[in-house]
Amino acid sequence: MFDVGIGEMAVLVVLALVIFGDKLPQAAQQLGRTLRQIRLMANNAKAELQDNLGPEFKDFDVNDLNPKAFVRKHLLEDDPNDFPRPSRPLDDDPLYASTASSPPLDYGERPPFDNEAT
Image 1 (cartoon, rainbow, N blue to C red):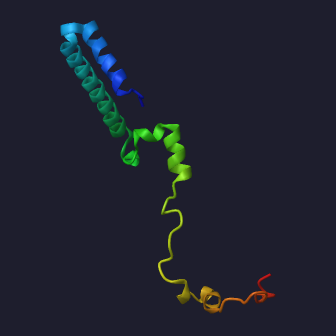
Image 2 (cartoon, rainbow, N blue to C red):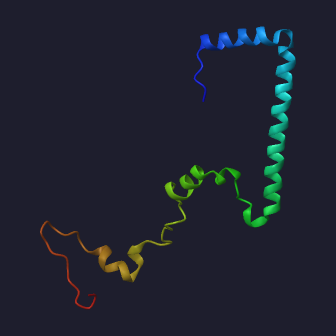
């Protein structure tokens, strides 16, 4: 996020000491309190939103509202429920028995032709 080296960090610390002087611990304490209050307000708003949406949206995540996360979740990730696996092997199914048990074709050999299928 920030590309700050060790030398730049030292300069920032020295500037903070010069500007704030002996009030630097109080300023850091106030900043910590403010960040805690903001985090608490955000968590409360998130919990209230999930409570008010009802049981249909129990899996709702606020991060899904981010357009990048939405595209990544719905378009780029594979859902294992999209293509369910058969409950039994296809070899036992009479519809697939002829294709499953047929030997592989040699190079240049034409596949069988079924007039009724076309």
